[in-house]
Image (cartoon, rainbow, N blue to C red; front, side, top):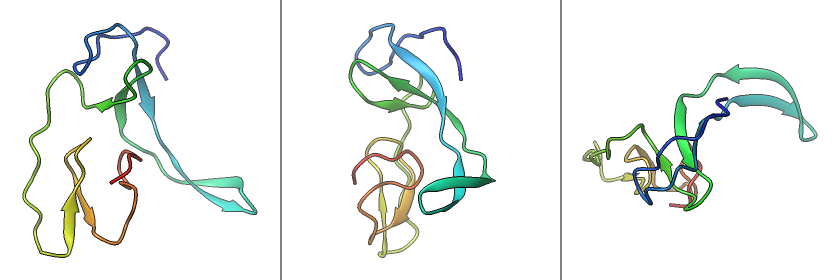
Length: 91
C-alpha cells in the first residue's frame, strides 16, 4: 500500500511498510471477488513482525476457554486455528 518505509517498533530499522490483507472468494485458487477489506498494519521486512502502528498492543483476555490470543497482534481467535486469521502469523 505505502512505498515509504517507517520505523519498526520491534527491531528499530526503517523497513516497516503499511500493508493490508484482503479476503477473496476464489475458485481453484484464483481470486474472483473481494469479500472483505482487511485492516492496514505495519509489516517489517527485516524482522518479519507485524505491528499496529508504533504502539505495542496489549493482549486481551479471551472471552471463553475455547479462544486463544495471538502473540503477534494480540487479538483472540478460535483455538482450533493454526494461524491467526487477523495477521497470518503462526499461533
